[in-house]
Image (cartoon, rainbow over all chains, first blue to last red; front, side, top):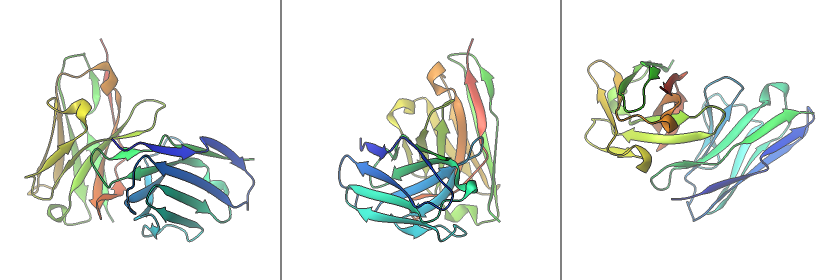
Length: 107
Length: 117
């Protein structure tokens, strides 16, 4: 199975900060990488697919990059509503696998 | 708007069975692959199963192979997950998700399955 490792596991940042979350795959997955946001007590929401393409309706302060084994999710200016746990997911090969999650809080 | 509504969760004893349903609306259901993803209490997301658009191909995580069956009724825009021989480790919120470009674009609100005696 392809292991997905996110870092950090948690982080605290101030409103307006630029935030970066990284995701590393245990083997090359091309750009078959998605990012999801899960606010507390809510269902996941899809943010990005194909490593860098924003899902419809996702604010432009979210961006994704990377290919192969190393990927990043960036929030250019942190907002209070961005408090959530973020997950990466590979869909290059079965079984689909998720990272363990990065919990983002406001300082 | 795309809308996915799961139902059928509940409390079941170890070794028991349960069938989850997901009612889809707001898109042409028969044109899209669908998926089930679960989340154990306080834990991360785990992909469970995929089904192709006409129900002819299915894919499962190893831990549920032989116990879970994903199916669909395109005439009624319904997705199902038949779960049997349930174990305590199957306790989770189960989400149905629409697949677009091989990954998930829309998610339901989830239904809780608790396996306990």
